[in-house]
Image (tube, rainbow, N blue to C red; front, side, top):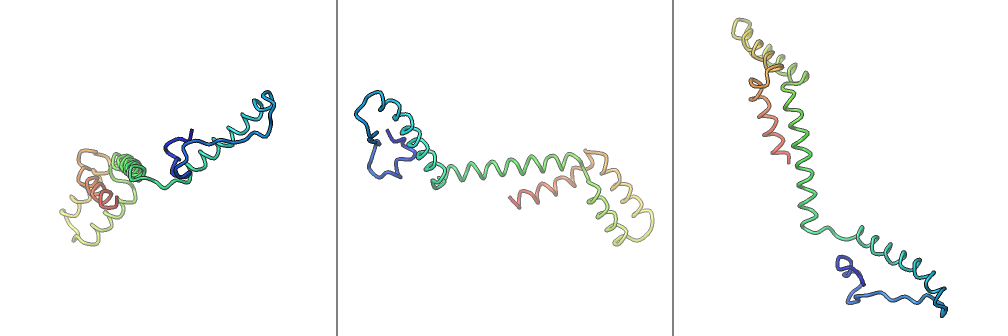
Length: 134
């Protein structure tokens, strides 16, 4: 019998019959296994070439989404990484005048590197960017 998932490759055919090239029952029994292996290999080849269904595509997209979110979660759990910290620090030096306000902003930024609760605003920005990307 041809499995339903590959039947479209065989038109209206529902089963495969193959001559084993012998009239001897013992020889036919030996050749049967090789013939079945060829047929099953053909089914498997058809399965690997089939056009993905909407469910296949949705499943792959969902898997990619979950992998990306898990990766993002790992990044966000580390609070502010070194590169992001340095970028923001340089921005503060460029945009803020020297004085207590800049020192306080730098102090807050430094705290973001180590305090997960205070780093939430930074991580939320990463999550928004990731969701837009996906």
